Length: 192
Image 1 (cartoon, one colour):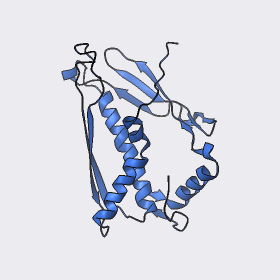
Image 2 (tube, rainbow, N blue to C red):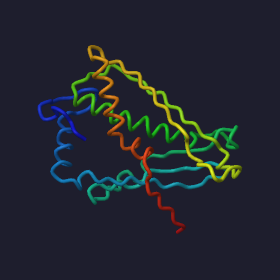
Image 3 (spheres, rainbow, N blue to C red):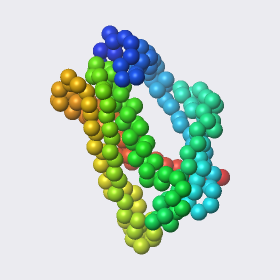
Image 4 (cartoon, rainbow, N blue to C red):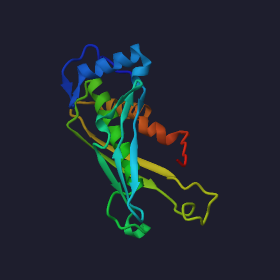
């Protein structure tokens, strides 16, 4: 990520440590493998549409960190209207949450690096699905979302709208989760 003026800024802005941000940018700039990260999740079926998943190890620059293995738990189910028991967040909601969370990281980092002080912001996300392919009614159609909409409400006193629009453009260009959603990604699935 290109961080304007990160070298000259020090301290913290929007809860982002500018020294650490600058050091991370420099580390990846100087050694591209420092930016190579592999996340892992391990899931176990709990009957019906329920899944219990935990975080796996994190690998960065070829070094495996097992401290996250099993540290966080996520549960999923489907709403009752979609044949689930409505006991947890749906997979579609997790996709939206992942995008919202990634936008948060990207927005906070880029706002801080640009000297934009955020008082608050809200994200409202929606995704449209047609279940016909999933149910086998129209197998020729794509089962995934047809559109995801994100509305961002920013409160940054003293910041011109043009600066905020540039910030939102940067978020769209630099969000790893958004990029994952908008381009073809090789997903390899094997029976072990």
